[in-house]
Length: 315
Ligand code: PEP
Ligand code: MG
View 1 (tube, protein in one colour):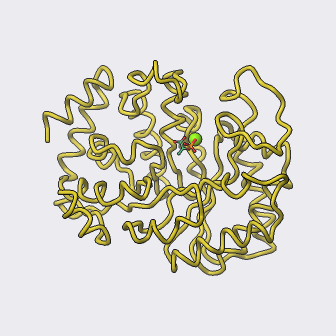
View 2: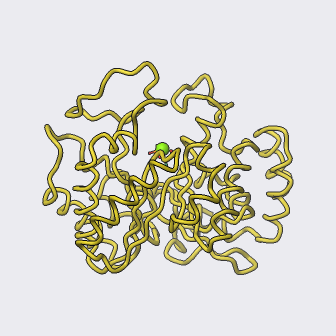
């Protein structure tokens, strides 16, 4: 099966009944873009731009960032790139950032909260991203948005930069990785062009289970029906406004999760490049109508174990 999946890696992921799921790559290094395309990526679904900011003694300026982003766009040859703006704090510290010590860094000043304290940092990054894109498709998204004011801050900063640069092929969206963002998706969907669900953090925050704590591995399962419910709410809210939804957390490459994500209406998954051929192969085994029925039953299940048992018995 793995050999066949590899042979068909450049073909789209289409279910038996003709429904296509976009499959992108998660990247933590712009130099890995060409290899991701070679592995079958239809674009970059999550560029963790922290890579551009790490391993330095100070913040990179526009031209330093530009060079990195341009390398990714060049390798993509017109395929879309979803760039997540700087997401430091929590599990992603930066050596040159004098972050205050916090008792609960995962609940602290991280992601967009940090950028709100240093708007010029985000402005520089947006300038570099929009300039690097040229006329290629670029999608910008903001991490850890929990509240409307954070979204407005980010969106307004984007508008200011875009008023200068006029990038012709750009969408602005946000990560949904905090339960409040999923619960409030109908409001965000009016302004956001797309959502990308970060199931790693969404699961952690929904179940109050540290994503890095092995003792809680069984509990922090993204197939928990409570997490699936938040995914369903996010997708429904987005589709009601004609917007698209991706999954960029680890759940997107979980072969048991894929039928459910399809059934819930997810439009795109972004996974680590090595997983792309198998993810596409799994989608080709699925039937969308059956996935929808399965997702309905999963939402009513008691826990993640029950959801996994459901998927196992149905396939
Ligand atoms: C996530 O939280 O699911 C995600 C994709 O972002 P990261 O793993 O970088 O926090
Ligand atoms: Mg995250």
